[in-house]
Length: 232
Ligand code: BTN
Image (cartoon, rainbow, N blue to C red; front, side, top):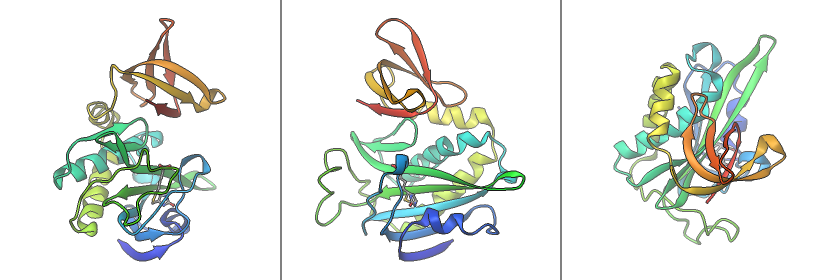
C-alpha cells in the first residue's frame, strides 16, 4: 500500500505503475483532480478515502467487466464489517447510505501488446461530512459513512475483499451484488448510455449474470441495460 497526503488522482498514479504487483493499493487523503465517471470531476476533500487498487489481468478469475461490481461488493462488506450500516448498492458503481451517495467507483484499464494488462479500480468514499459542506451541485445527493476509524484499516479490508472476489467466480460476485442492490421492485428512470442517453422508465427487476440491469418498462416489455445511470 502506498500512501499519499494530497495527489491529483490516485487512478492516474496507479495507471502509471505498469510493474506494480497485483493488489498494490495507492491511497490519498485528498485529490486535486479526482476523476469521476463520464469525464466528471470527483469531489475529493480531506474527510474522504481515495484509493486505487491495481489488478493484474492474468490473476483475475472473473470476467473483467465484473471488477467494478466486485469492488462495490468489497466496499459494502468492508464498511459493514467495520460497523457502517444502512448501505445499498446503486447500480452499477455507487454506494448509498440513507438515500445519499457515499462512494463512487471508476475502473480504468492499461493495455499492452497482448490486450488489457492492468485494471485500476478507483474508489472514493465520503467518510465524514466536509467542514464547509458539500459543493452546491452535489449537496442534494451526497452523504457520508460517519466512519471515524482508521483509513488504512478500511483500505486494507476493501483491498483484501476485492482480491478474494476477483479470484472467485462470476456467480459469487453476482449473487453478493444482487442481495445488496437498492430499489428492487421500485419505479425508476434510467439513462441508457448505450442507446444515446435515452431515458427508460420502469420497475427495477434485478441484474443478469453479467450484472446488466433488468427493467420492466411501463409498456410491459423487459429491457436489459449494459451501462447507464439510475435516477430515482
Ligand atoms: C464516480 O462516482 O463518478 C466515480 C468516482 C471515482 C473516484 C475515485 S477516488 C479514487 C480514484 N481516483 C480518481 O481519480 N478517481 C477514483
